[in-house]
Length: 266
Image (cartoon, rainbow, N blue to C red; front, side):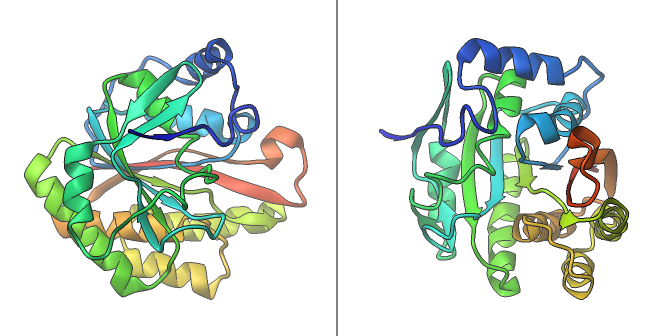
């Protein structure tokens, strides 16, 4: 069995089982849960984006299957890298790869089974514990994306639409932070424009505003893919659950990173 060991435990989140459980418990609250199709979650260190991720996950029912789309920050591995059947290890627990769905995705030419893109990549790793602690039976498929080629990303979303039509009860997760390293007021305005297109479920509008306004959303590819999927299957509703930036935590308003949690539902 292929095991993916933690890459950022002790850096982005606690490296001990007890401290990780305590951290997640403090970030997730008991609220009425909603059935959702998709969600955008941030992937910074828990001190920065954990409250946004926790508040967002608190509002949704986590099914037993999730497909996580994440950006490739390292440059390693294949262009559309699908982690093979196996499991991801975390302090005190592990999460199995959904063999059935992963093999169905792997049958499509756009995906490449690959571990290289995932070994040092944090953007899926930091959000998986939130999903696991709400549903310890969860199985995942993880797609790490290193391209902004629209036709390629649309092939990914079409494959995901086929999965949805067959399984229905699958959560599609796009991992992304928002605008990076600009002054607070400028960054908030840029994020507002990007979030507007996201909540309208307008994939081309989203990617165009990011290009035209130089909005440095690191998960453009996962979000664009998710929005195309939602559009294809007829999802029309969205809700911004929470938004903040790093300046609210460390007091540095000169160079901030934005974080948002958004859910999508029929």
